[in-house]
Length: 121
Image (cartoon, rainbow, N blue to C red; front, side, top):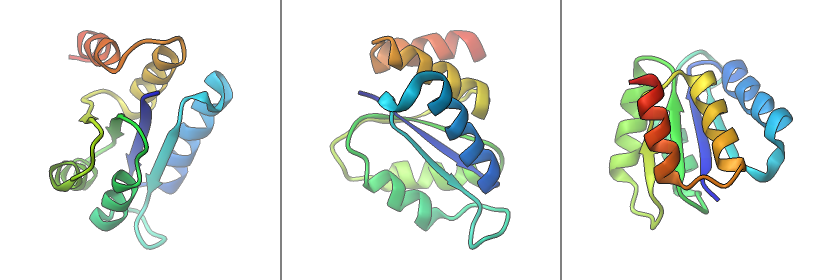
């Protein structure tokens, strides 16, 4: 089943979004959250790359601002695994939540990508 990746400058935003998704759709949809860098506000390419390299399924990635997108882009570009990893241009909380709901009811990664692209672009 497609996973959700959340990358934020804030640990609290990343973990809060993950908690919201888990409460609403359960833990059937895997959610991985990376927030902050070295205990501060920011993002770390190394942390994001490590998270992506540990995937065990296809993933949709949501991010907040600035370096979150830049570091996520680089981590996806450097990813050498066998799973599909898509960066989504949707609000981090609303987009990730909507994707998780759609995944939880059996939508494919392509269906979720199409739906979110129509909704947010």
